[in-house]
Structures are given as C-alpha cells and as structure tokens.
Image 1 (cartoon, rainbow, N blue to C red):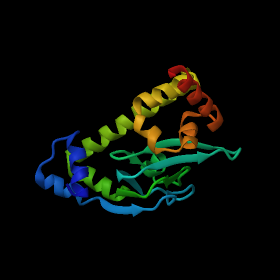
Image 2: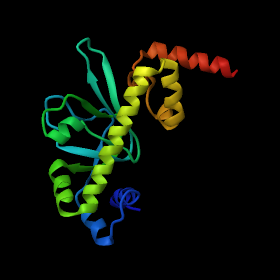
Image 3: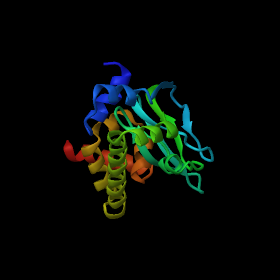
Image 4: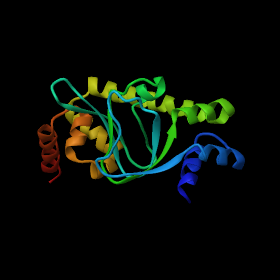
Length: 196
C-alpha cells in the first residue's frame, strides 16, 4: 500500500468512497518528511494545514506564563494533528506542533480541505465525523482532568494508549497528564512495587 492509499483506507473506515473519489481525495494530500525536533506550527503564525501521521510521533503544546509546557495533543500513526483553533478559524496559532521522531506525514491545506468538502458530500461527512470524534475525545480528557486523581489519569492513559508510553518521553506524558515528571515517576515506581 503506498502512502496515499493509507489515507484512502483510513477514510473508508468512516465513509464509503468510489475509486474515482479515492483518487480525488488522495490527490488533495501532499507527503512530507519532517526531522525530529522540526516544528510544523508555531505561535503567532496561522496553521495552514493539518497532518495525518503515516509514521513517527508528534506533539502539540503551549507554554504558560510561568514557562511551563502543557501538552495538548499527541499523535502517532493514523492520528491527526494541528493547532485546530488556528486551522479552523485561519487565525494565529497559540500552540507549537513539533516532531518527536523523524516522521512521514500527509499534509492537507485548509484551502484543499475546503474544496474537497464543497465538491463531495462524502468528503464533507468524513471531515465532520473527524471533528466530532476530536471534540468528544477532548471533552473526555477535560472531564478526566477535572474529576480524576493523577494516579487514575495515568491508569486510564496506559489502558487506552499503551503504545504512547513506549513512544513518548516521560516528560511529555507527564505534561499531557497535567503533572510534573517527578510526580509521574513516583506513580510509576508505586505501580512497579505493587506488581512485584
């Protein structure tokens, strides 16, 4: 399967598309290679694209007034990433999006996505469902952050995203879960002791 076929296969999990539609859909994406530590989006610049991960890992984060980094989103294979507020409203970004590994991505620009949605109902449905799932996921995470203890958040994280614990550095996971790296280390050490 070539890399453009990967995005078609992904889309077909959500909406039925014909061979002709598949060609049209795939042609809107451009394959890009990014190096580890390369930034795709930075604050004050408008996010012109969103990215589908073919392979690699990426992180979206903000920096608070105190200089503390807060991870907003993580992405591995078959995940999407961007500064969505900037992308959807075409206004300056507030987040950094950076590659944590050398990564191969499919990029779609805001303009090309808009064209796809305008010409075909299936494409519009695909992107709408993608947005709905993203919104639901963000809501679940927000509720978890507000109602669960740090230990419970970590347990949920490793239950849902075991691969993330292997691929992302501990400081990134801690930032994503809203805790310090030291506190995450204590939780992990406690788990190891309980299992032994």
